[in-house]
Length: 103
Image (cartoon, rainbow, N blue to C red; front, side, top):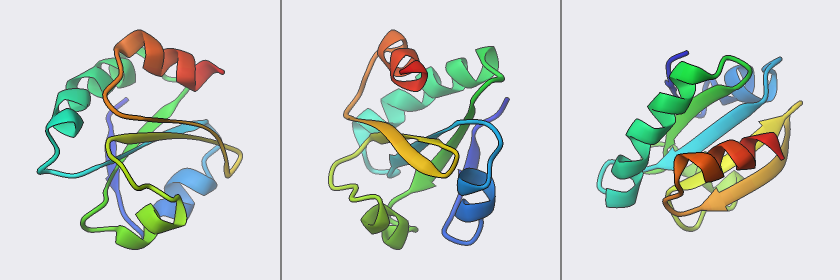
């Protein structure tokens, strides 16, 4: 599965209405740790098909970032059945991200 870039227009359809649990990566182009996290998330997305992974650029989608109280990035938010169930802030190793998704 590929990581899909999403925005405020398609967030509800892609994330809140998803039948799969969703890992939302709140990030920005200028953020070093965010860029370091991308290849880790791509690796997870290629290995797992029981989760959807999406990317939200906070500079382009500040309302979404505000709705989810994202004050530091990278911020990973796990959403199941339209509700936030877990989150993590900062660069994390692959194993920690998978654990976050499975909790």
